Structures are given as structure tokens and as C-alpha cells.
Image (cartoon, one colour):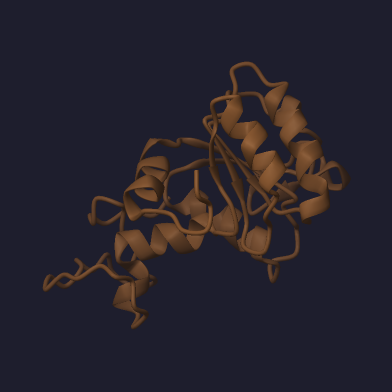
Length: 179
């Protein structure tokens, strides 16, 4: 697969089918992108499991942190990697040791490892590199477009208001109830 550009349908299918997400390299620092992505995905209805051996047993964004992917107590649909590219092969090996295998191996913005991607695809996993699921979800749901960013999603319908706070839409363009 060409990982230089992804069709919106490919990303939408992944984000629509995934229910459980392990965020490898999640940070307890609220100003770090991994913290915000963990919180954002959980607020959109995903079961999110932060993975960080230095924070195991603590909480990140209100979720218990696990030391390894194998410690996560449920089957993982997607592994979201917030680690430098040289750490990706080790994270992939950990993911490939899981049973059942995750459906998706996602590498965050700035993270690309073509050899690991080829190995993950050979094992049957879908792969996304150098993208953020939070940004892609916001773009495809129209949340980002509503705030003035070009989302390549055109609609003449104004999103329904949920009350005070941030507008939250699902990929089907319906509001997501806050948890």
C-alpha cells in the first residue's frame, strides 16, 4: 500500500470499526499531544488504554495506565504509537504477540517506519503512518471544518448544538453525547 496518501474512505472505515485503542507512549502531561489524543478519543466513545511503563498503575486522562500492550485486559483493535520511529519495530513486535491481533497499527504524525508497516500489513493489520486519529476523526466528522479549518467535507447543515462547550460529532455527522 502507498502510505504517502490515504483515501478518506480508508481512514473513515478504520475509525468507524475500531472500538478499543491502546495509546503507546501516552503522557500524563496535559500539554502533550498523547494526553490530548487519549482524552479526545475517549470522549468520542472509544475505549482507550494508555500504555506507558513509567506510569503503569497510575491514570492518564482518567484511564488506568498499563506497562505493556500484553497487560491491557481486553482485545485491542488499534495500537496508536506515540514513540519515535526507532522504537516502532519493538512496539510492532509487542502488538504481533497479542492474541487476537489488533486490526490496525497507527503511527502518529512525524512517525514513519516503512519496514514495520510492511511487516504489519503482511500479518494482516491495516497501517496508517504520519497521521493523527484525533485530527482525522475531527476532519472526517466535520468538527474541524465547523471551526474554520478546511476539512474537505462540505455541508450546508449547521451541526446540532449540544449545549455549552465544544461541538462533538461522530463520523456519521451526528452529535456524540458527552460522557
